[in-house]
Image (cartoon, rainbow, N blue to C red; front, side):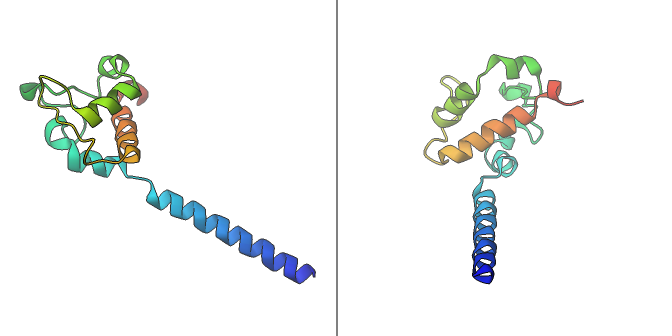
Length: 112
């Protein structure tokens, strides 16, 4: 009986570990998404391009001026009267969330 219990415990631990790895593997890569979808206008480092009037995501003032919800909304729906096109039909919600986190990671005030 003890052997069976040990076996079942080990099996359960393996299943849980496998599920955790699967969930981590399924999480979108915000850096890769930013590189493929955003960097052509916002720069690979998130600093933007003044010539096309894209925001500098490394600027703490820009970061403070936008909530996560606003960033997600702009990614989904675009920004009127700018070159920012909507990506809501190209990206899933978890991919947009990963992009929001990536944009937040550019904040220079958080880097020391």
